[in-house]
Amino acid sequence: MNKEGLLLIISGPSGSGKGTVTRKLPEDVFALSISMTTRQKRGEEVDGKHYIFCTEEEFVKVREEGGLLEHASFSGNFYGTPVSYVKQKTLEGKNVVLEIEVVGALQVKEKYPEAVLIFLMPPTILELGKRLRDRGTESEDEIERRLRIAHEEMAELPKYDYLVINDDIEQALADIHAIVNVEGLKPFRGEGKVDRFYGNNVNS
Ligand code: 5GP
Figure 1 (cartoon, protein in one colour):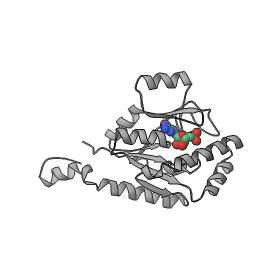
Figure 2: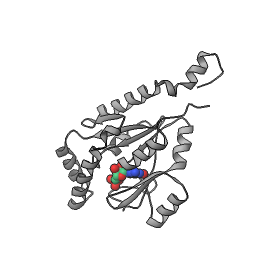
Figure 3: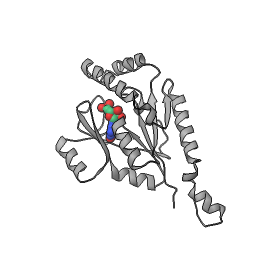
Figure 4: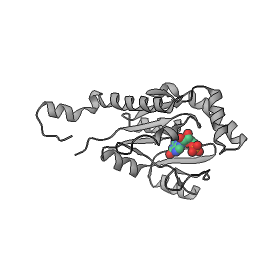
């Protein structure tokens, strides 16, 4: 049997580079959860890959059937994590990565205290504004709204387990790998190791 994977939540202001960083995590050990959202597709996004794009009715139906691990509204749209994928991949031993905003992240931590909350922060607020403008996918109004939300999100930073600064992507990735390694050493995740210590037959 596989050892269960970690549930990693990566939050941080819109424009902090969560998507860029998480997409560079190796697929053999990490599985990126695909969220449902009611927002419009932007830029090069692909339905079923970046998000499952849906109507408000579809979203509400899935939510009411208990199909979401967490959900939140962000800048006027709904976002939520389908629970089935997360369960399947953690049981397969993958580290499942949820790239979600703070309200949803804290819902997950409440349900699953063993989840690991990582806050990804750009080096400065000026750099955050620059990244949002440079990606050219949102209107100036939407950018202003996202920068306002960024301040609210920063206020939740103390509730996170780790802070990673995304100044340099390679360094941010190295930090995430270090977090995964150190989390794997926590005694409460070490059941298999204790079994082996006592000579019980476990094969993970
Ligand atoms: P964007 O519109 O830029 O793709 O996402 C807006 C915010 O929603 C980002 O902070 C993103 O991480 C977050 N988000 C994406 N998917 C989910 C989800 O399933 N649940 C929650 N709570 N937030 C999400």
